[in-house]
Length: 124
Ligand SMILES: [Zn+2]
Image 1 (tube, helix red, strand yellow):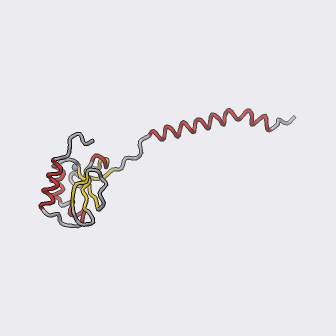
Image 2 (spheres, helix red, strand yellow; image 1 turned 180 degrees about the vertical axis):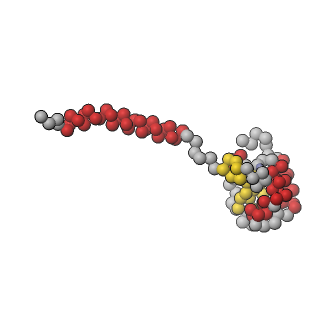
């Protein structure tokens, strides 16, 4: 006697239901895992840090260099820790000049230092 295929599929269906709920569960778990955090290198201390912990320094298409707290300004960007010491290191190593392939006038550095001082300590 041959077992009817209907009978087998009936037996298998709870298993396939289990598999499908397992796969749903797996997807849910995977979704809860944080996405790969984008890392950027600070131009001062050269450490790799999560992008959102760094301040973006941006050179606009017009050549204006400023601190980009929101990370949304157009232009070429470089990243620095919210720490005047890192800005000082970047200044000493001319890392920003290299990043922007342009000299930064002293008044831009002063403006950057001023803006850096204004970073709220609870920015994150
Ligand atoms: Zn740094």
